[in-house]
Image (cartoon, rainbow, N blue to C red; front, top):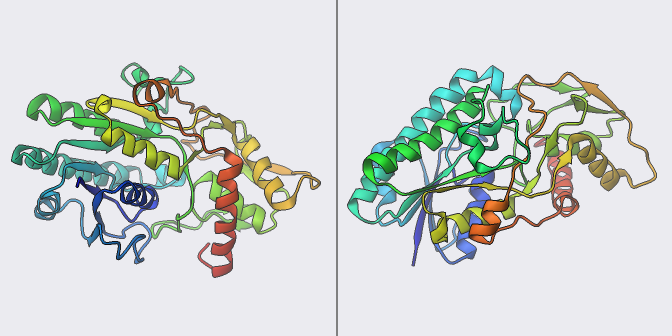
Length: 341
């Protein structure tokens, strides 16, 4: 039976990943220190094929011990937040994520030398295309686009160069994955968040879908939108993203390749707001909105070309936005009722 090690396994994307690999029959070893959300019970706790460990993903001895017997490694641990983080924590996002990345690759190189680890799968980010000028943006644009303006995007680009360097010097195989705007359930208020108001509602998660949903559910009218609402995004369901990552781990064609993992459907923030509004209020209540000043790194157009994953791996993210909202909006409503948002 194949065994995979996932750092950041108690996080938002990590929880989807653990479920995906368990459902596919893998043994999963997870590591998280609960630094983002605070103390919680990891999803899938008690599953017979899931071994969770609480600890620091920079701890070399711990990484070595947990990688023992693992065939694959998803380096998912990172300091991450919404765009509200990018200016306020500009240095920490660079420094802490660089330490996490270096630790992950050093441990992966050692495990590969021991003969068990087949490759490392790197979770990069759509933010490497922060200053891209070609849309939809293909994977090849990463080498010719201007570098990201944010330290978060720049460090995610550095993750990709760690992969190139480890292959070149040590022969460590890799797959690079760039998720685009993952949406789903399980996000909580981060412990490092500070109070940011959007009209009369305090932003909870710094990500557009849950924050718009909670504002609509709390009755905000007119709805406050950051910027003019014309920002283009591709909202990808967490289950689709996890499936795409598993395909990248398993498929031989993914070896030493990079992939945009995303829905192909582009949606503006205003279109998203209208969809959430109609789900909550019905079609007969017109949306009224006002524009608030955007955050500094609120990229206007982030749109991937996903042909490579479809052609080489047979993967497509197919869950439509209305189906995603059918799951997310009730979950946000429950969190509001419980006082967690």
